[in-house]
Image (cartoon, rainbow, N blue to C red; front, side, top):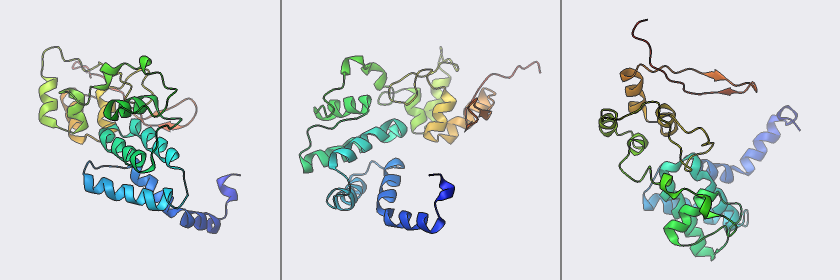
Length: 224
């Protein structure tokens, strides 16, 4: 059935019926807090509106929460905490279909391997520390323009070097600094890169006819 086959009134009816579900998952995907009180409030809503009301099994919600991390990894600790709340209150020891890296991060934080089938040996744990250590990537994550500028002025800084880390989705080719600025919404760092290094941003149309915003950069020749 296509979207055109769904009558607007039926769509509105369904949206109204599952508003609690939609609102909660929107809140999870758009999570922007590390405060314990705010996380507790989110968890209470998950408890009452999803788990205790038998709308979704606790295991499914844990899997969903951990699988969001690659899309919003600035708040990894918050997602791990929410998953741990559920594990503790509902005595969950095993969850299937968990993102491998998120599963590893949960194990690293709490000593619990939720998805027992995961192979941690295939994970490069070193490239998971790029956001916890003093790196240019952490500066971008927090839009810390002073630290960011300091990194760009260091000897050996390479603008064209891409970050390859299992923390991100579709990581095969890595992410440029501009792309990371877009991922984190680091406006100040983004503007600095474009101004300082004469970067150009283009919108590309992929071969499959789906519009995708891709940020391509290059130094403009001073001869032109």
